Image (cartoon, rainbow over all chains, first blue to last red):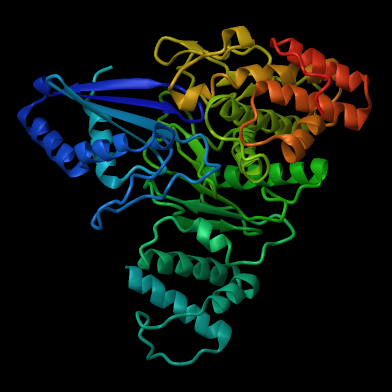
Length: 122
Length: 370
């Protein structure tokens, strides 16, 4: 399984990418990653996000978060220079993506983003 | 910890408002907002700080983590500069703890001092040059959070406040160190209250460009630089010494600000023929801003003198009165041309300069459009 993270935007407008290949991870880290993926609910979020019209996807809040998730705020109109993130999980021939940003990223997704940032290769 | 803080703050209130009773249970005690408001207006620095903290803590208790926006609406806006600096202490919770309020003595380190001083400079610029009273033109408070995140290589405007990271020290220094960066962020607020340009594609690149334009004008005004003396750079000094680059962007020569083996090359275009079509960065808003940036530079150089006086005025009036949420580059060219004619006269030197500025980036202002 590969997790690809692309970060773009920000004040400097730079784009950077990093990828984690689970094959290259130590067993400890691989477990940790699986936990983070499960906690992040990424497949469910990705599926819900895919149902939204494209124009709403990048800058809108994730729809109806479950009660136990701690949400950051919705990306307010007028907000600028935040980083935007696109997380893609490739598993065999299945691929799912999720987009979020500094303002609306939920804690569960942040854990995953931080892990990939730390362990990934360019 | 939370309740100790709350109790301490409430003890402070008792002395201001002659509220008796040592036996009140702070968990049950609900201080009406009007009391907090009065403390913030009339209290000592320490009492003001604690009143703010209590409001923030109370909002957090109610489950709302991002509170600066909601709180600012509780208060009558001042008719003057009103800054508050917060410290996120490397978390990503906003706004963080208050470290400095308006008029208070400097403290908290240079990030705090820079955020405080430079937002004051930006306020002064808008007030003195354009008679604009803060971001919303109604004296809105200027809130900034410093030390956001860990090694956070960025600064942003969240729709309510400014947020600054410390940089990782490898690629970036702290983001509060440049006056034009702070001017840039605050200008996003101005744009939000005026044209409200959408943050994607050409409107987004215009949004970015306006922040760069007024960001450099704040700096030029502070340094009293004429157009030939100014460096026309955005974020000069933000890069660490390890990076091969002078700044993040150049309005004078888009695409030349940096070229480094680690972070890559400045990819800004200077002309419409090199417009970048991408899905990253909300459609390249920080990239294609190079085009309207350069148009402003060319206009200002053509007019000469101090860029904020004429070119800046044309751009400001266009932002305030004419631009719409979906305006694109062509519309910006048409509108600035029209505004220049209105302010300085049809076929004036200034109007011709605007035409030349846009021509220089591959756009022709439509002379017949109003």
